[in-house]
Image (cartoon, rainbow, N blue to C red; front, side):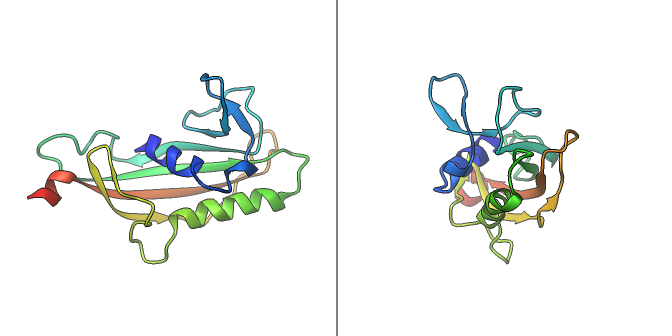
Length: 153
């Protein structure tokens, strides 16, 4: 699921506002990380996605489990020297990627890893500078998913 979130975010047209990073394939891609902390040579602005609660990634894979709730923290940081205007623009777009007002899944979601996303909620972003004073924001995305088996029966 976390890789699906990563793919969804980097596919957005506003991603050029993020720094680029070579993840080892020789190509620079938007700086969206699923490891925390990100590599020391990563430059801001960047996004860090980490699982912060809920069920384990593979919890819907067993015969008896038909649904799961996943919770992810998304943190966005920018350079100390930059105005927060650009940072807030990235955060606002990230928030609206997951927020649709009624808790239903965004139209950009579909089945992921044998799961069907049923509901997505996101917390309002709040200011969360890091320990070194880099400006940042944090939000929590909660995803409720069911096994594809439920929809096939």
